[in-house]
Each structure stands twice: as structure tokens, then as C-alpha cells.
Length: 404
Image (tube, rainbow, N blue to C red; front, side):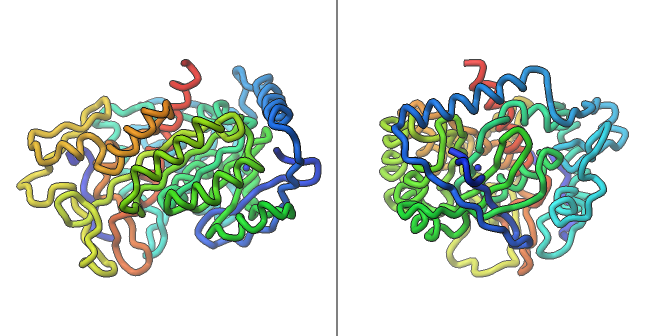
């Protein structure tokens, strides 16, 4: 590493009454409120309803996509065609490509400005070239249909901190043509859920075609998942839904015990909750030996650097099969996913909960962080970069899980 060029420093049971849906992002669009009218049913009826929704969507899945895409060849990518995952326009037809909406403009990832999370055209091109050099071709040739046909008819709950928010943005952007570009806050008139939703910093969703939704709920720490998210999902979630969950960056001294409690809930009550796919905590790239934010660094701007700042050169190597290697034993914990992921992967493995491993590829993207408006910071990534890699790995993981 680094396998990429270093850029210049600029650098969601729908009820009979309403669809529960949501807003998530940037604070750029105000969301209208929709009501989750929770129908009090026995769990068997709830599961039956979820299965019915799945059956309906499955009838449409095989070989069909509501907005077919031409798959780009590697030669076309080399000649300058932008991959769909990186903001490429829908071909052969487009639904939103002429839109000047805030979301449409954002999802093109073109303009670099301070406070704008877009990487800018230069860094986007350098990233594409880096993937070409590593023969990481599938991320460049994947189409939104590849992912949508694995998600159709489900609510995808993305739950976590601001990194998970970025993940949900990347999902919305990749599935941009399937989305109506309208965003809604989740609310409920049911007395047991409304107070829980009000305690969340954000609870928002977006409607896609085919009874599909992408929803984001903010949870920085495990206790929020246990106290708020799980009770909410028991009321408005389906076992057919997918939950992408990470709470790792804002850890507590009892992180492992808290994760074990979350895992135990899904082991004991999994039939009443969405299917859980735990997501790795992404790496940070502050100018410290292991890249983590030091308390004495203060506010941005910061300088981002590869993990291992005291080494004469980058001590990590990213292989073509997405593995990290090192010749320095000091960085073996990084090769194994960083201490947070070492803990979380072990807890989830013991509970037979699958993990979406996004650490390795993200580790290489130390020079794809962003200016948050107050200067460079080394936690959040610009678009397109790591969040798009996470979407690709989600596609691969869902294929893997469906083949089991």
C-alpha cells in the first residue's frame, strides 16, 4: 500500500394506513412524517405477513429488474466510462439523470467544496484507476440491479453512528434510479413506540420501487440499540427485513459485554426481528500509530496518514483478494481488523451472526477522507470511496448468504 494515488490536499409491518419511511442525510431536505400503525398481532401472524411480502417480491425477482442496466466492460471503464457505483449515469435509459434535485446532484459525486462530502473528480478517477491496477474489476462493473434484486421487497435498516449514515447514503445513491427521491421521518401514534422514536437523534427512511425501503436510525452506542432500537424493531420490523448494524466507534469500557447482550437478544428473539448482519467498524487515519483519534488533537483540520506513522513506509499490504498482510508484528491487530472488530467478530461468530467485513479495503483509503467544513478530518470518508466499497462488499455478502 497505498494502492491508490495520493491526491493533492484539497482537497423501512407497513400497515393499511401508512408507509413508514424516513429521511437520513445531510440535513439538506426536510422530511414529512409518516405513521407506523402497529397492528397488535401474535408473532406467528407477524411472521406470516412478512413471509407473504417476501413471496410476492420473489415472484418478480428471477432475471427481472425494473430499470435494466447495461453492464460496463472493463475496456469501457478504461476509456472513461464512470462505474455506476461511483456516480455513473443509468444506461440505456435514465429516470433521474436530468434531475437537479439535491440528492441527484449529490449522488454524482462531482463537486469538491469545503463541507461537501464529495471527493471531487480527481480523487474519483484516481480511485477507479487504483482498482483497475489491482484488477478489482467487479466493483467497477457491478450494476444497481445486482444489488436491488437481492433486496427487493425488504426494508433495509441501517443502524449506527455517522459512519452508518454514510453507508445509507451510499446505498441510496447506488439505487438512485429505484428511489423516488422523497425522504420521510418515522413516527408512530402507538404510545409504546412514539416515545422511543423521539429519543433517537435520527430515524428516517426512503421509498424504493418494489415495496423496498432503506431506513437509517442513529445509534452511537450499544445501550441505544438495547434500549431503543430493538424495542422499535420488534414493533415495526419484520423478520424478512435486513438490519445492518454497527456501534463501535463510540465504544465504552463494557463494549464486549454490551455486544454479547445484543447478540443474545437476536439469538433468543431473532424470529421477531430483522435478520442481523453486523458491520465492521471502519478504520480512522489520524496521524497516530494505529490511526485512532487522540484526545489531545483538538478540532480539525487534521492530517490523515496511513496506519503506522512511525514506520518508514506503509507497514500494511492489501492483496488482490482483499487481505491485509504485514511483516511487522506490531501491526498484526490491524491485519486482524483492529481491536474493535477483533472483539465484535468473535462475539458475532459465537452467536452465529454474519459479519460484513469492510475493514481491509477501507484501511487502504487513508487519503480519501473529507473536509467537514471546519477542515480535514480523518474519520469520515468522501464520496465515492470507502462507503461505495462497503456497498460492494454488501452485495458480495448477500450473495454468499443466499447461497448457503
